[in-house]
Amino acid sequence: MVTIKDVARISGYSPSTVSRVINHSGYVSIKTNKKIKQVMKQLDYVPNAIAQDLSKGKTHKIGVVLPHLRHSYFSQMLLGIMDAALQTEYSVTLLPSEYDSNLEMHYLEQLKRKEYDGLIFTSRGISLSQLTQYTKYGPIVCCENPGNKHLTAAFSDRKAAYIQAFTWLKDHSIAKIVFLFSRPATVSMTTQLTLDWFAQVYGHFPANKHIITNVTTPQDGYRAAQTIAMKDNTVQYFFTNGDDIAAAVRQYYVDQHLPVPGLIGQNGQVASVTLNIPTINHHYAQIGRQAFKLVVSPELKNQKIKIKADFVLNNQLFKNL
Image 1 (cartoon, helix red, strand yellow):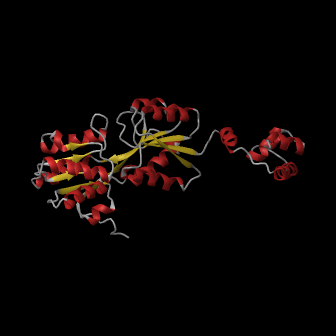
Image 2: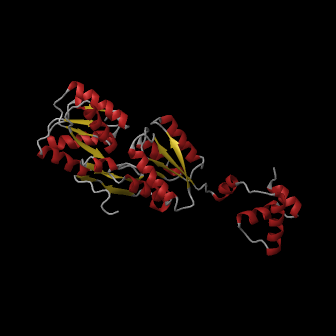
Image 3: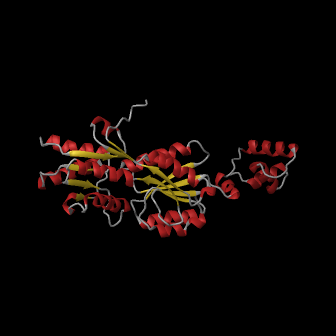
């Protein structure tokens, strides 16, 4: 394998002079530059990109920590991140975690070793305090409201939309509502806040039997509908965590020739249009784009960008096409 020392030896110049030519740094005469490049071409020498990046203190790589891609939250977020990255010189490395705190700490250690220029946490298993401790090693952006933590963030400002949705349900005398969540309230702030906001409108929390967790895919939604239908035929509405999941709930009732309960979806997907059901649009792709902008802009450290979620009764996703 040809090295920079080989180029220096054959060209007759020092390794430091060859390095200046490769990295376009410092003064090198036109004659010297031409000679060294001729030798590089002759030897088919390819500079070590990793070494070059390290010498510049940049890898031009952003790590995106995401538990999985089974839910539209993560796929839409990633779509926005990739869209923003394609407009820059940065590449994106996906870092799957399944909420494994050991894996997430490993990714933080990689940031500490400068293997990435920054990390985006779309969701997390470790604490916000642990994330905060690693911000001294490079930019870290989280996609949730970090509260009073000194963290950079881009996230959905969802409270108003949820209050509006629950108020609409209450105004329509909807009392028995099943909630579908990805994770239980003990580990998910989103789940806990959703239940808190429901209680703020209704004056009480939903019955435990009407809270189903570990729902991330349409298949999970279908099974959740089956579980509820076998136990309680008086349910009036499903408040789901995705339009595609709401569609799967509906399909179970259709398959069993049962009356279909009311449905509220989330994420503003095509399913909410085709089924003509209310949805909560969190604009996750926009959040992903903002998160990427923040992670590659150190001067924006500790900024918190809120993207307002919308409760949409009549989804007109294609209106402006």
